[in-house]
Image 1 (cartoon, helix red, strand yellow):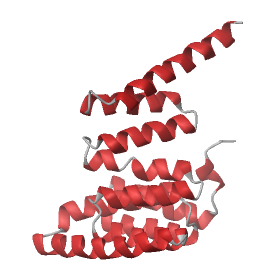
Image 2 (cartoon, one colour; image 1 turned 120 degrees about the vertical axis):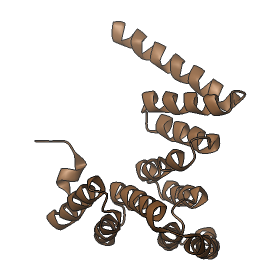
Image 3 (cartoon, rainbow, N blue to C red; image 1 turned 180 degrees about the vertical axis):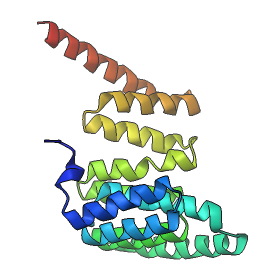
Image 4 (cartoon, rainbow, N blue to C red; image 1 turned 90 degrees about the vertical axis):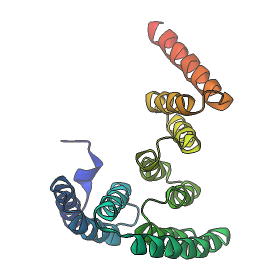
Length: 201
């Protein structure tokens, strides 16, 4: 039996997810948006569906948006983000996530919205879900070293040291003087050395 958590999903949610992945493979991004939205409506904490919803929105916007719709999207996203920020400050985290997701729909290329969703998820103890949505940021802007470093720290916190090291290294490629990333790599190397030491005992 597989350990894949996707296999433990209720059938209807798994069907939406599988069809969504197939729609992405066929580059039918508008249909994928509908499918992943349906999966999220049934399971709000479904990190993979949230990531692929964003990805489908982003790919769809690259193919079908014009200047007017882009401007409208940015304005709408900014207004919604302000509303979400207010909810976040008053502890209404799930409402804030829902509103940030509406902002994401309006402007899927806005990395600050993805960061804000991740921050809400982190505050709710959903570190792995936060990591998943943050992995969209380097696809939009692979020079966002703040996000790269944040991903490295989150991966370190869940003890995925290989991914943490990769993201610290990516941070240093963009910002060679980042002392936190340098220190992070040294720390991870020390952990690896200790692990090898204990394995050999």
